[in-house]
Image 1 (cartoon, rainbow, N blue to C red):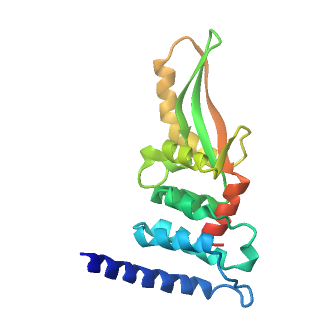
Image 2: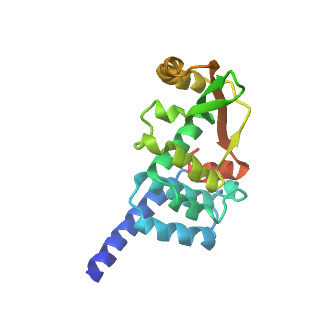
Length: 212
C-alpha cells in the first residue's frame, strides 16, 4: 500500500509539473525569477492531496505568479493556505467575479411596518442564486462568510449601479408578491441593496491565483 501511495504521488507530481511548465511558457522572456520556498513548498505539498480541478488551477496560477517578476510585490506567503481553505464553489465564485469584473451584489426584502419596525427576508440573495455558476446554491451565505473570514471580501453599504441587481430582484419578485399577500399592517415592502467587493488583500489574491 505504501508503494502504491508513493507511485500515485509521483504521478500527481509529474502531472502538476507538466501543467505548471505549460503556464510558465506564457511568461514573457526575462520576466521569470526563482520562486520563494515559503510559497512554493506549501503550494506543491497541498497540490499532492488536492482533488479539485478548480483549486488545482488556483495553486498552479499561484506558483506561476510566484515565478513572475512582475507580480513579486503582490504574492503573499499565506495564499497557498487560503486556497486550501476554499471549496470548489468558492473558486468558481472568485473566477466569475474576476471575469465579470463586478462585485457580489446582495438583495434583501424588507417589510416596513406601520409601528416603525421592520423585518428582513431572503437575506443576501445574490446572482449565484439565479444562475448555475456554483453547485451548492444553498451554501452561498456560508461561502460569503468564509471568504470574509479569509480577508478576501468585505461588505460595503453603498450599492453600485450594476445589472446584477435587476436580475436578483426579478428572481425575488414572486417572493415579494407573496409577502405582500401574507403580511398585514405594513407600510412598504422594498428591496434593500448592498454588495461585497474585494479587499486590497483579496485583489492581490485574485491577481496572483487567477489567470490574467
